[in-house]
Image (cartoon, rainbow, N blue to C red; front, side):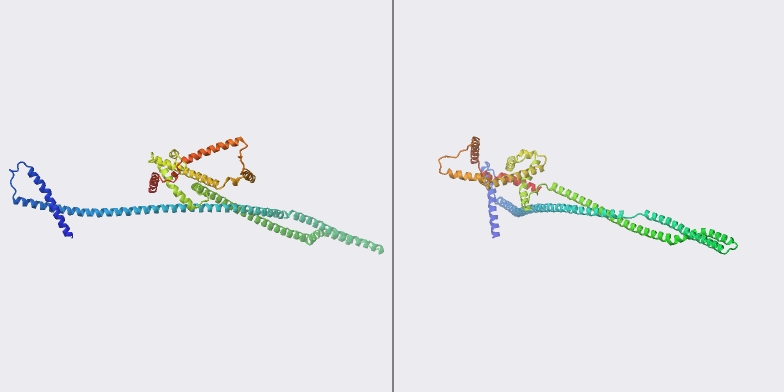
Length: 481
């Protein structure tokens, strides 16, 4: 089949070549006025022409085959390029989807981490407050206990006796012992004098009864002996008194003084130990309080930095995943607005104005903002206001006015309705000002109703292709950046 097709193609090409070359040649010969002057054609000329045509036909066939092979190779390369482009587009779409999902996951993880950090900071702050109260109560009890202990130490220290009384007692004992020694010496002297006088009186009586020659020499010797004993009597009496009374008394006083001094030293050592322990405990408490103060200051600084970096995004008690999805849905609009600020003239100002007008903003306020972050903040605030107003309107629509009336007003209204059910008269306002205000309000309501009837409410739900293209283009540019 392939050989037959190639032979048929060769015959067709050859016939076309003969037709292409012979018809112009015939026309040229017939149009020539000097046909008679032309040499007649011979078989050799025709044979050479046919050979030339065959050679040209073969060359054309070769060129045709070459071009066919080139066409096939180009077709294959174009097909492979198309497949490669499709694969690249699929890979790009998959990478973009993966990038979007990863960015959403990262945003959700960041939200969860921020909420976890905020809850952790809140828990730590509450624990710090509870610890502060507990520390305050414990410090108050500790200070009261220290005051009571200091009062006891003062009473204990005030009960320590001084050594002045013992010194006075020792002096008094020495003086009394000296006086006692003097008394003992005087007593001995008195006894010796009495014995001396008794012996003299006995000698005188004996002399009276038996007269004898007087002998003065023994009396004089006795008197001299007594005079020599007087100084010795004083020394012996003093030694005896000191040994018998002064030494034991002074020993007892010295031992009592030593015991009292030892007890005083022990008491003072105890007071010193207690005061030192109280001082060290107070220093430890002061250091702990300083560390806690620095810890609380660091915690407050971390909380302030967290609030300043996070802002008021996570202040509401919303779900982190829902908040992340809401911010990701709003992100292309905010990115497009911030990107449009970089360009001197926007590409589609009308579409941008429509998008901004739907969120309650104007194009001029967005273009004349100082920074791109202010645009996002403005959009977020406006969105928050719209959400709050929508929530308030929903609550107002769900709660009828009759539920807010007082029971008396409700009873009056029901009674008047039942009384005027079958009556020919109509209830009118007694106050003219209220009637006039009510009529004005009815006129305003009629105007609003007419305006609402003239509005095309399908515009709200209608899809605008230009706006969608605009948002997709700017969103894709933001993703590429």
